[in-house]
Image (tube, rainbow, N blue to C red; front, side, top):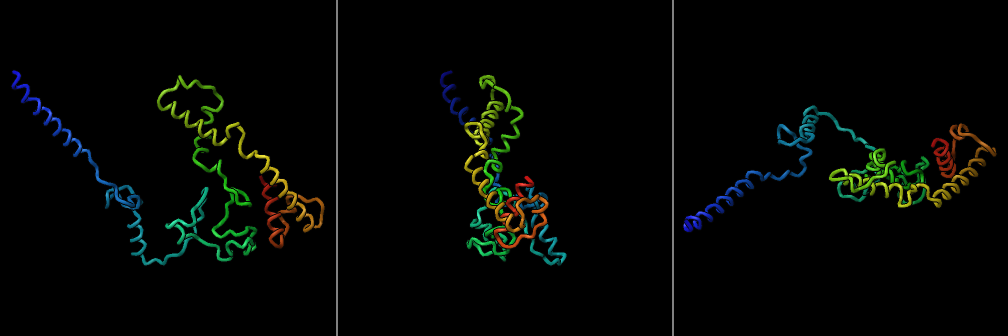
Length: 237
């Protein structure tokens, strides 16, 4: 009895190891190829956008290609990125880095475009553009006006609430006040508005003016254009 048990035990272990190796072999998947998102489901077996088929179709029609300028709304672009720097659109009428509005469109050094979301001073909209803002606003109705005991939350609900609290601290700040209410920024905006007002009163030849006056006013020079654009932005905000 003891003898058969001793010889049977290694056999059982070997059998289990064999089954484990078979299971591992059967569940092993092949590596996803680089650029799979460009491939075709029927030809390559991947749910891509079939870019090669589209390219061959255009070539077969002998169509002449035309450059297309695509405007990207984003919170920041690395203009030195190896995949972007050779294809980024550049404003041919703007001389980069000279601090001047060379093309006279009201924007200084707009070589690759302009950050309209951040305002005419080029500030990046950090709080409203990063992923945490989406999480914060999506779950605000659920968690914003309630007091929760985390001990009553479990699993996914607890993790979701913790994630929302982190997003809230980023968007509202630790003290609960939005970063947009920074007094130094308000003071800067006020001084800029006063300067623009002085420039425009002189250009318009009147001490008071309306939004309609600004809208129809034909500005000349960088200072007048910048002042007009800045105050029109405030009028329309």
